[in-house]
Length: 373
Image (cartoon, rainbow, N blue to C red):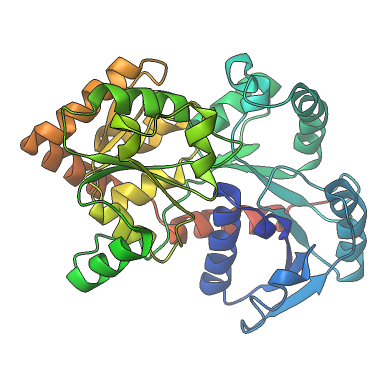
């Protein structure tokens, strides 16, 4: 069987790009029978998987995403005799000559309290085209059960149309105890001695609830001897955007910038707590990463965050800074609770693996390809 994979999401930053990279790598690792034809929109990733046996790589023209998805890819599928096409993101070519499978990472555009985090034009567009993608796709993968349930309810889908395949942290995410490694990473990012960690991104501060994080930290500052580290490229603009003071509690907020994936296990391990009261997540990969490193977590009792973190975190109302601050204070002042929550997260993280995700994904791809036309 010849499996095509659309890899334009590799150009992005964030969870979908991480998923695209890991699911592709794991499919190529576990599958020793099928051939893979990888389609790129940018030449920056061309050659990434060329060393794998049974892999072809092709750079396809298409300056805009819609043209690439709907014109370049279906033409390439016909030219390269693709049996089934997989897109790790939420579109499929409507004129694809072969069966298609896509992955959805949340139903936010269809849920009013979530849609407010997106532009009105984007919401209207997605609400128009997403049902068409669902009708065209032979099968749909979903990254969390709540996403599966939401789409089944909203679009009234037939049973079995959507399959939940949980994501996972990268295989290198584990507790880092080597003092030399920890010291080197601390020095590289100028990390304080004791700190609370959160990860965010410019343009996504409201969705990640940066305001709630800062308000909670203001309330807990002085009750615990911890600084706040906000990782993410360009996040230092939050100081002006959220009017953070230069002195007092604001002086204890650090913005180290982008943190390399290879360094993140040590960063998590250095932190005393991972704070992620996000307003909106389907499968929060940073929460899974923190759990794999045994770091106690404070996160939201909402959507995919509660589903994934479970007993590995203290769950809070993301709209209530006082509740967030109290959970932070509890974890950082109660040694027994701190140890128990970290251990529970570490144990829970074992249920999420890329091998399992890839195996379940491959089963869907093979089933779709074998189905009668």
